[in-house]
Image (cartoon, rainbow over all chains, first blue to last red; front, side, top):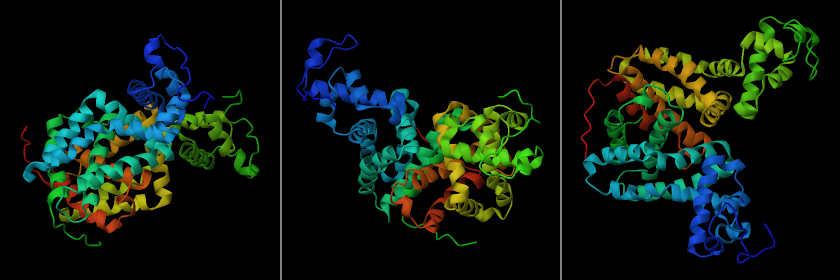
Length: 216
Length: 216
């Protein structure tokens, strides 16, 4: 952090317009957030710094601290923006119960098929798998809140556990199909995946009775 | 690589016995493999070098190249050893069809509950998610061969696709429970997870008819 306060001069960088550089309002805040997403996605959690984010956004590092706090808090804010598509999930679950699983599978595959929404999610997964600080942010600030919000709409026992099981399947598919790109899943028709996965999600999210596992 | 050939002198390191150090037979080979697993698991794909593996094994780097080839080939060999527990899966699938899903879920959770078998798998996942060379090894040498072997025992359409869907669910559970440690899955009773997941695996691996997904 420099000795400049949040209102200190922001040095000109990368030819960004000086009006914008000097802004400390919502415009600067959203520019910092966009820079943070790009930095975390491009460099990973480890190599991203508040200083680097500030440079990208064309502001002083103190302003980044002023708006977002520590690097972990900055990461949490960037992750939350990337999870914005997930905020419509409770709405998706709110429709007719009989095809809840299919709606969710279709929505999830759609988010991952779109490179613009896929890239930040891949970056978050990578960071969370390799850095405990990033994992902590994911499980604390984001995943838990999201799962609890989804669970609130479910009429099954252990709804948060059920929601997380559904999430685990979708995360596993995303990893094998889009990150590791293992065949045949990587080239499979999205409709074929949705057809197979929808009944699984449907069972997790709507079926009250689950058979007891018998020890072998 | 040094100018010493495979038979060149191996410097003494870390107090290993000099007889073993000079060995170039199966003993040296298995010591290199153990060192490679430890190095890849501890440092990750990126920071592991043939030189570092040689040092850990107390042999010359040329001997590592002699037995295992390039770094990628060394990684593939280390991954294959870590996947040895998976080699019994076709045997597991060969039992009575009606509880195939439960046997597989129980076996998989058992492998991941055991820290000794979990650690190298976590290391492989981390490497594959962050380095394309490691991902290539995983999808090519290991995953594809393993999935095809499992698929050969299944009596369903698209057996490799079905096997990979089952694998995706188990990998997703492993990531959320053991790596990111997201609650409530992280603390859930293994029997509870097996009870929920077994019918899903059973369906993927044994049910011939799958409903067509209807576009919304």
